[in-house]
Length: 147
Image (cartoon, rainbow, N blue to C red; front, side, top):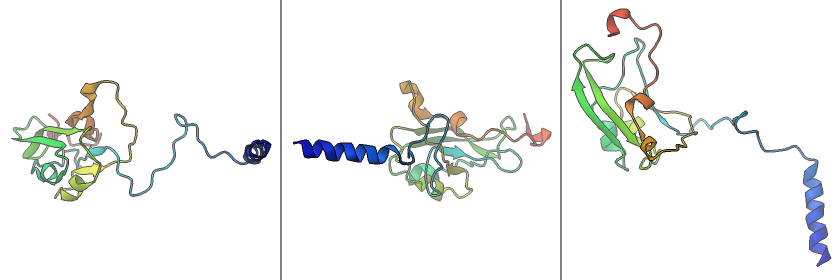
């Protein structure tokens, strides 16, 4: 009975003076592996326009049926090409972060980011909208394209 206690204390003292493995999470973050697939991001081109042409291949490729989009024609009021996704949603509770949407996109508009902090406090936040996914507009976008 005393031997297991002494073995446990010896193990504790042996590890007490070793270098710590833990990090202070909110202040320090561990680097992600190159193949890590986190929250999706909708990209913009070099002119600051949305890359998504609303072809729907990402929604078709999604095995969990987590992506919903509606296509629309651009009348010049949106910083996008002639055809864009007026509604683009990803249901966080359904997404399995497989990366098929990224592989299916012909114009590389969707990208699996490195963000792993996806906790929410409200059930309404389980749906990522286009405003949540779209990369902020470029500061050097041409003024004739901003409307």
